[in-house]
Image (cartoon, rainbow, N blue to C red; front, side, top):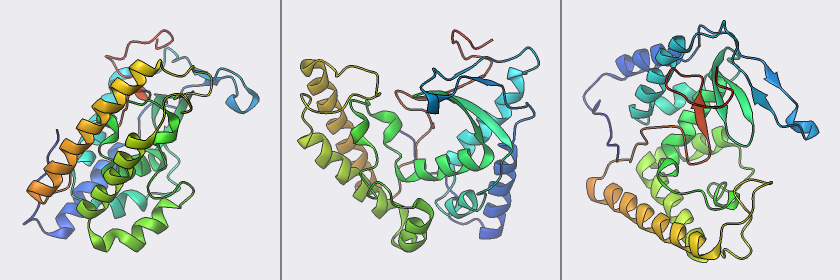
Length: 238
């Protein structure tokens, strides 16, 4: 379980300078790899990395992501300020393969600071996302209205929403994690749900006991991953 980086006595200007430098590192030296297929037309959207794509050049991007995840909650404002930065950053595989911009990744990191528990729990249904703030809420506006309450308090509210959902969700009617996937067998669904409840309770207890926000150590979750890295192994990752 990741713990908060210690910048308590560091001048705010120095923190912002470091965060801005790390965000700049999110811009890859690689060009965005081509995407085959169009998900909006029902195609199986896939990325096949060309020979010109240098996987080693993605390592600084990956390390910048890891460091930004460790930064204090004040970094969220800087991350959200990079809206519209359309430089290529990295590629992901989730429902479909996709290329993400610096703006996309900055926003993803900012959201992960709130939903720090997500990489640690199992994805048992796509309905477990968008619980808090309510689905459709514009994140930047919501953050600006609520950040004065502190990340710790907001994380607890998000975890409480997830705990309520996990206690109530029914494996017989819950949507699968992917539109084309089948529902999990009930026994497996219930086992993973119970594990999720234990993990969520442990993270909540950590936040309450330490008085510190819980920080995720990765962006990826059980059904989304960064690829195109030297250690990535995937059928078309070449």
